[in-house]
Length: 567
Image (tube, rainbow, N blue to C red; front, side, top):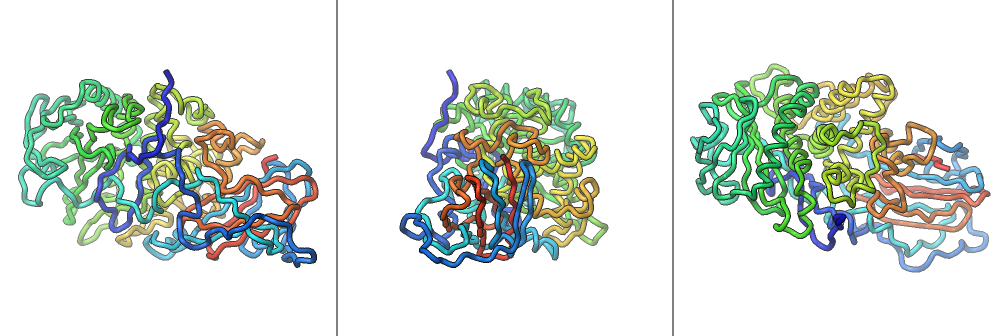
């Protein structure tokens, strides 16, 4: 019997830890049950109080109404794109082509722009958008598509992600701290640890040691059902055999450990409130340069019977996804620590969610697709698998979740970063090398400046090495946005998502939807709405044959625009 999405409640189903912080930058995790994720009721206008739609139906402009003066005429063939500055977007003439279809994409690039000058800041208001026919006619009462935005507050208001820095289960001088383990763990060992909820001292048993380096332990009082433990064991076997080589190629071969004395990485199975996520990675970095240490926690309560709809997580592929995501954080922290210039003190800094959480999903999904036997550019039929009661549903979650909300990271971030990887591969870069360049660049930040003002190469320079010196990150986010809407609709490979098939299919209920899909050139229209800070969106437009004037404006000058013809 096929799995059917549930609806009407939130259940954070992936990797995060409630109350964890990312150096003051909050980042919402994508991990809701799929039903709550997709059966959403909020709209784009709910992202902020400004810019709500005016009441009243759309009506033709009054006779003799003055139209704006077009700054440019855009005449595109199918598959062509055109980026537009603010003045051009504010009033343009689109040449007439009967039956033509277009995608207009927009991106609030303020966070990217401020990253040119120093550490990226993500706190910002929500810009207001107005898209109309240039006549200044009355606003439509139509709301943006409900599936445009999740039914929760904007990302900046959400709790922290699943990586915690300079944190521990216990006080800094507590000998129970796994970071202080002096000897290797061995299978069958029991050891005391403080529980993730409440801090009580509990006993944990080592269930499995793989390659002498990876320790799978279970808190005795949180004993899982047999399937969970078995699936986690299978996931660890695959991580050790395939995932670790991927992580080593991506970040370098000096593998992270939980403590210097153990020389091992601890993965602890324990139970906590499933509303607070499926996993967590805790890291401590010694400022004197003596090392950085991490361990992983996986939530035994992310399984069927605990919350409605959690049956979809009862697959080894989901345990693998969580484990690989959290281990990626450990590799990220080791990389960030060891690539700092020589200094009196060393610290690691948790970057914005698009970089750290998006990168962790990028790498973990790369491991997962190998496990499932899916090619990087296989144009995989995700929509069919999203309803299947098998392991493939986990790999289908990325196209089902992405909504242009880059600040929240996770699947939005991984989709964008993989888009960069694929564009580098098209230019002749080896796929694994492209993954490494993108993942390292993400950890380093857009322009290589982290929250401690440490300078590294950065994502922009790494991508420019393959795509050319003219490559700009804001334009890349725009192109990624348009690509998701135009996927498999043109003959232009630069407008295709090669991993997934028809990711923006307007007929697919779980796909990323246009904010509006009823704009008709040559007819009166006017939409006004608020969009989330740092996010992107797209609008679908059609032409009956005469073309028309398009006016696209924003309350913030950092918003970028791109027009693509898809038919």
